[in-house]
Length: 330
Image 1 (cartoon, one colour):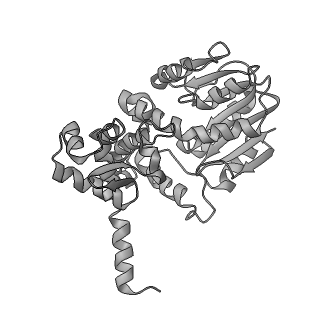
Image 2 (cartoon, rainbow, N blue to C red; image 1 turned 90 degrees about the horizontal axis):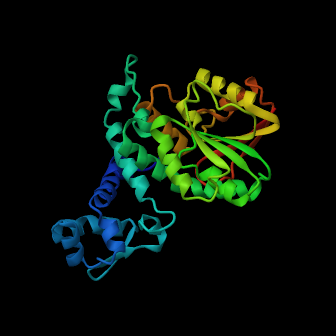
Image 3 (cartoon, helix red, strand yellow; image 1 turned 90 degrees about the vertical axis):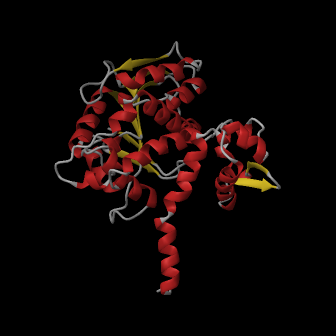
């Protein structure tokens, strides 16, 4: 057991974790990272560019220097090599995720009120079409973070002459990467009314529009007509209760061609529900985001998949990010 003074230091570090997050969100909201990449590196010019007094701005910037997010030489600030992803112009820029996290932080303030049995919380609706700005921030954040997984998918699996149904497609990054690599592939991107226009915007920037199209609808009600070689269900199932997930998987099974594959990712817990860290904290986030949401254990999702008729399961933990990939077939 560590000493009481060490315990206090460790405990206070955990409790005060919100502070550096708030600093990052505040700088993003005031376009500080944007101005740095545009060349306003010196504290005096950066202060004028964002209209924040030098003394106050330097306090925030110095905090990020301490954490290694920025580098300070004299009075000049720049992005560190270890956290180049806060550069808004970097291909893996996390600035969209910062803006999404600010929206999520506001929801966490209501955690206490979400604990009552009669609470029917559905803040998830805001980021899936209910609020246009929050939805766009969410899609932007998820788009960048999905790129490494999408690249992993095309590097390890064959989609030649495959027809794809992409459920909850978001930006359509998975279908886009597949479609650009496999010119014989075709697909349908399926999204909610408040999201599908954003999906179409992203898709229009790709070269696959003649083979992939976007359909608006709600997978809780029905799936698009037709049969598909593969179904994508990426980072969706944590929004669903056991009953809703079983119903969705049953619909998916019905639209798969013989030999078809379901590609499914999410964040899964071990059976003790205290590891890994990301799914543990994501379980808390679902309390404030969606009353019916749930983070499943590996055994729970495998049982529901099997009950829905998917008897051949392959689990891949090596995908980039905190998610696990399941490939399921009948």
